[in-house]
Image 1 (cartoon, each protein chain N blue to C red):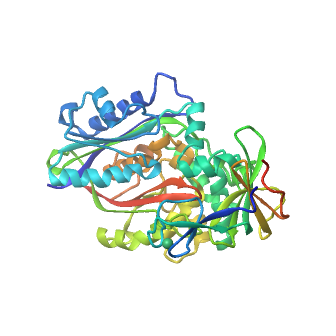
Image 2: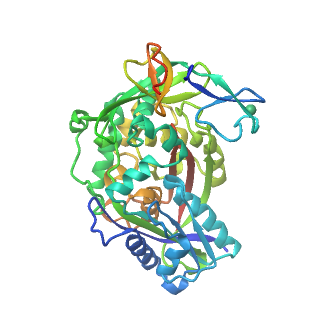
Image 3: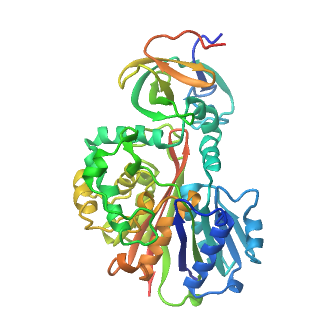
Length: 379
Length: 103
Ligand SMILES: [Zn+2]
């Protein structure tokens, strides 16, 4: 039996959410919304997966209990920006193997100021022992170093890289769920004060509270358009934190991904790249083959800047916000909406095939985790 | 006390790592020795704000021993040779050999 993604939902992101909209409440909202979007009921669910930094002391089983779910497949993934596609990789196999028939995957966080500071300082042992003692206040500094390195290697300027946040802000204007929707000009982008040079606040994701969910089920249970995972590939510890990160694990997995999907980069109508920082969206585009002639500057100004190719049509995390571990599912939810034709004002015409990526788990110097999927609309 | 910053090196294949790890990523050996790592070259640097609100400069430093590390810098600019020392658990890179780590 083929597994399909039958629905998706994003519990609205908010910069300053009320305390009552805690992590559990947000995840519940996302699960209910995704089931409704899929035309399925609470009683149909027999598999459950979750990613969250702030669910503790509860775990997947406790959340499933709070949601009243009796399941025969359960999974929790702690891998932040790579969690959603990792959950999806396993959920598709589980449904196709008959281990479960309808799996809900959700991701979300509501982190208060103190919880966020603790998460950043103690993200892993390498961070707690070797970065936090330096006066480290989070990954902005590390990605500032990487942005400098990448721009120097490729002769790029802030004006080149700024095409990504400026274009994504224009997409966000059409997304009622994005937290920043006012137009952003390249002049405003260039004039912003550095947070960690060359990064300014426009290069850093706004922290929000929110949650996302999708439903994976058998092809006979879907109603209306659904989404098939044509191929999904992952690579973890690609460079063991020993490389320069100018190319990433995405470059290593790209050929296998496209071959398994039976598609080429020019076949996709939209891409949803993990945009924790503009440079990461650019590196992923380059590594995954979206810049076939290697002319990064032209790609930034024309393909992205003029929005001739739909990239991160929700506004991405840079404009819509990053809800902790939901950052990994945000692009997937947007891709599913685009492929199912439910993206409203920002709907991409004739979206049949899309690329989605997950990236993250900064392990000392840069992200350790890379995964990407080619998704296809099934009418 | 500290004659200079040292890092772990694989006892089997000599691959040097920082931060320390359990098994060598090259050969899988669990056995480690140490190697001097007090010399490097600053590559990129950025000024940011520490959680306590003070300004702090962090840099990538390519060690002569191999690994690229993240260190706090004071006077070093990209391209400068630097000396590394641990100060209260923080790796600090300076263009002049600093005093031994504070007790
Ligand atoms: Zn070894």
